[in-house]
Length: 182
Image (tube, rainbow, N blue to C red; front, side, top):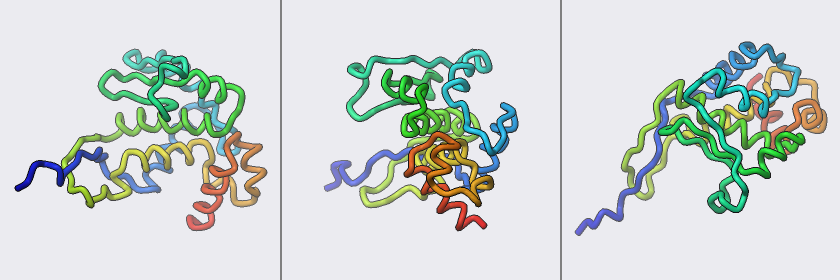
């Protein structure tokens, strides 16, 4: 007897390759006039988004009102981003992890506008292909927006951290992508 426990819901995004996402982040940097060698002003971009997209809104929420282990969240249905106060303050003060979190949520906003996300029933042991996984896409977007891989060939991870205001983990991931990209 099947009682429905063999299936679960998964978010499935329009397929995007690493290169597709890279080209999209390059376009965003060009649109805002931000060179590949410059740190991306993620807080300022999110603050100006409501002027660019009148349907978009963001809210800074006290940490105690956020869901456990949720630091920021984008809601497609309301076109709204909720950001934990500590994350917003941290990103404003140049904490790399918090800057990545905001760029990740911006990725959800941009990528949902760029493609489609749907929910499908999949088997318990089934997995969504990486290139269709909205979380993978948002992480890829965030890393490429903050640290364009074409510009870091001659930088150490420490130099990347300082130049782009990211965590060491992001610097290392992007540096490894750069090596495999070439």
